[in-house]
Image 1 (cartoon, rainbow, N blue to C red):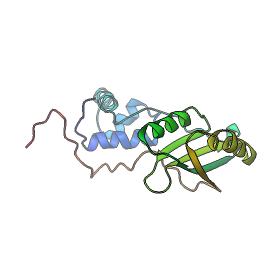
Image 2: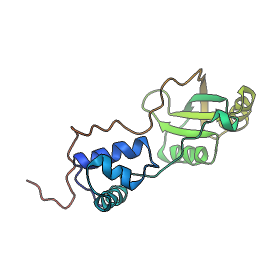
Image 3: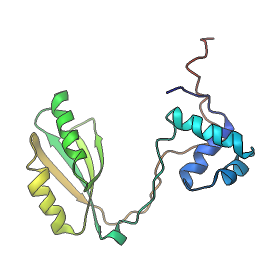
Length: 171
């Protein structure tokens, strides 16, 4: 993965694609103020450098019957690296878990879990999560509503860190 220098145009491309991943290359180029072929080359370079990890549809959970979102704080009995990895591998096999973050502090992991209803979540909790090896405790918090959803990161087009190319020499 080769790092590229991010200039204003690259940051604009990243910002615009993050807002609308289905934007055509022609529209993306127009917004960035460049022609389509160099825009496509820049997008490919950003993909290869790992700045763009993928493109996804934003699916409405409720439209598919997932009316409950729960954040579960999970504590493990052991924090040995192999035990942490085993737990992460197990969590990755559960489709209900949409996000998993390892935390510093008294909680080891924070999981975002979706379910059709509260009873479905409770079944998941008792048959899978609390029954999992090494899980010592789980604290559940039911999401009432989502007031902000902004995936990704803030991308400031005008001001941002210049990323040095790995091939650049030290100055």
